[in-house]
Image (cartoon, rainbow, N blue to C red; front, side):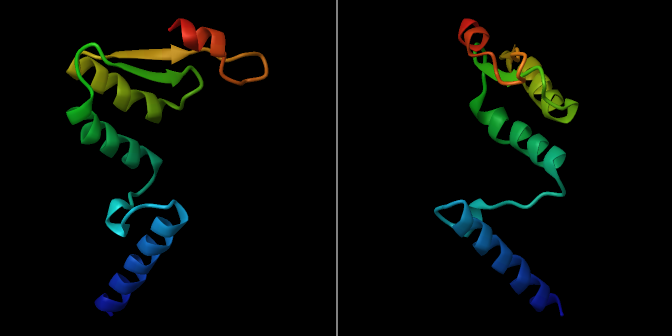
Length: 100
């Protein structure tokens, strides 16, 4: 039974890899949800690639679960977290973004 579950799981990984045009199915990582995925990215990729003087840009509309990992990463690595404002139509204010 375990091998059937593994085959189904790996089949799903291959399907997703094809859908997003990944170079290899091993590039696809499944997590329990968006919060876990964001934390994984911030604590692994971010820990290696974000350093002093770097800027992390998000918007004021982000959910707390998307802001907290980046706030913690910025504080730990000497980076800055910049928040772009929104326009009245809820789109990103590009003038404000450029001014950041």
